[in-house]
Image (tube, rainbow, N blue to C red; front, side, top):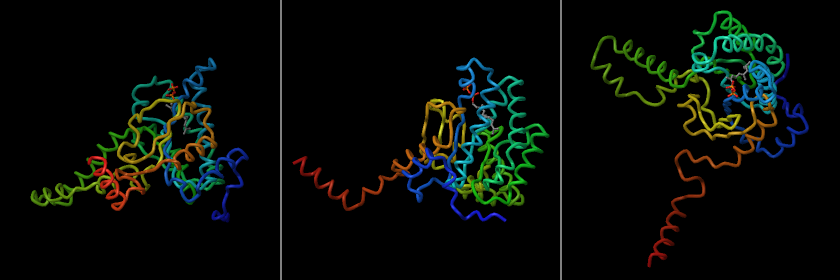
Length: 287
Ligand code: FPP
């Protein structure tokens, strides 16, 4: 059996290692979520069909996953196919993306195991074609024992739909628990808190993302993990997804580590003592 507690940093490329050395290993984010965008533009720039952009995008996925696993990133979530993609893109493109997903999974489970990566999915999976669901299940079962990075693919995913699904579940659970007692139902509704919603999301078993990366320069969230990214840092790069590699993930993490996260507070440099000091300075100015 392989021992996985040994560092795999030495497997980074020389260029990746140079960026990794600038990082504080203690402050590696727990969870990075990526909006992979720009496959179509990448192909268009080369006068290629959009399909080839997606194919190249699937190659980027594997490069990025392997770098993530080498630095021991606990969770990596990739927006691979949105509900809106499913509804609004031509059938031929949707069919191609489904085929690509299947062949990606079949072709990469071995590498996932070599890299100790566990596969998971979020989204309305049950609406995907049956044979795709079967391959997805096969891939998650065959990587379930891995203990390194959890790679979550968001497929047929929409954040508002996820919230609707969570609300439905919360209501259903409250109705069951109240056993027809209307007063009890009212109490349960009154007692509903954030944690009750969080644990009914598709992401119930993972921490919220610390960092969201979006490629291809668009400054949008596009209905991705709306609840979970309340306090995430956002990093937008002009690079198109098929050109994105592990080194770019490391650069995004380096940028993330330079930010001060405040969660609605004032940050570490503001204590009651130095706020009082500032107040007396302000009073001096006013006199
Ligand atoms: C956005 O590019 C990307 C997608 C809609 C799908 C993402 C899919 C992949 C990266 C490849 C397959 C993934 C896996 C996991 C095998 P776009 O088509 O919107 O690009 P554009 O905005 O330039 O047209």
